Image (cartoon, rainbow, N blue to C red):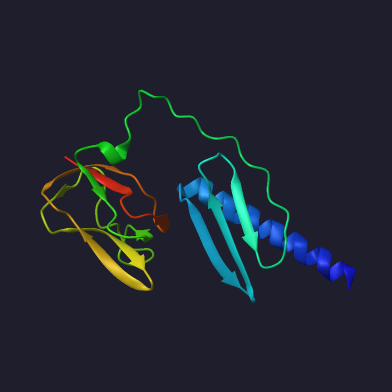
Amino acid sequence: MADKKNDSKEIEAAWIRELAGILDETGLSEIELEKGGMRLRVARTNAPAIAAAAVAPAPAPAAPAPVVEPASAPSPANHPGAIPSPMVGTAYLSPSPGSDAFVKVGDQVSEGQTLMIVEAMKTMNPIASPRGGVVKEILVQDAQPVEYGEALLIIE
């Protein structure tokens, strides 16, 4: 029986590390999942540490060193041509796996043209261009989780 408890703790620790890695990769502030009767929430606080709370106690992963960005680097979210996500969800750059992306860097787009899809609660929400212009930069990857207000791409 002791082996099952240790195995369970190792699985929980691995799960926490995996979710913490997703937070780092995506820039999300928190993730909450339920799996097999266990509920796990991993959140990034104002301090550069990762807090974890689970139904069963599990060891917290070591906090990664915070990424320090140069003060002179402008944030894409502040760019006047940035198109923000209208919701929390998962961004998809193409209508289906394996098909061409809606837009690529350098494409001329018109107002109302679909730029990408953000899936929220199993609903596919097309993100339409609010204006015409040229796609200068795509700031998200396909199937990347996005937060409300996060810059998705830049159109000039």
